[in-house]
Image 1 (cartoon, helix red, strand yellow):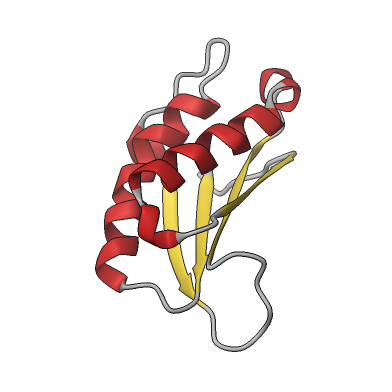
Image 2 (image 1 turned 180 degrees about the vertical axis):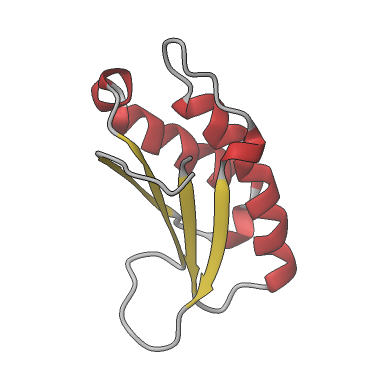
Length: 109
């Protein structure tokens, strides 16, 4: 189950809520690989408001998922495609930054 954290300073809650819903199918599609077809319901998106600190972008997105070979091979492309999609559709967010953190995964199912 991939998780997505949206970190933001000074962005409207309404806009981030819309973005969070919009990201679920996009992330599911971008992280689908091989026999593993993700659905939007398998993607958890969280919005985290930041006070203080020095963020690189007005909005920063951190995607965490299991390190499958196909994802590793196209990880930069995934980040760039997600970033371009968001910046095109949500122009008011400005320069969005996206990270994909791929790792081994344990879970509590």
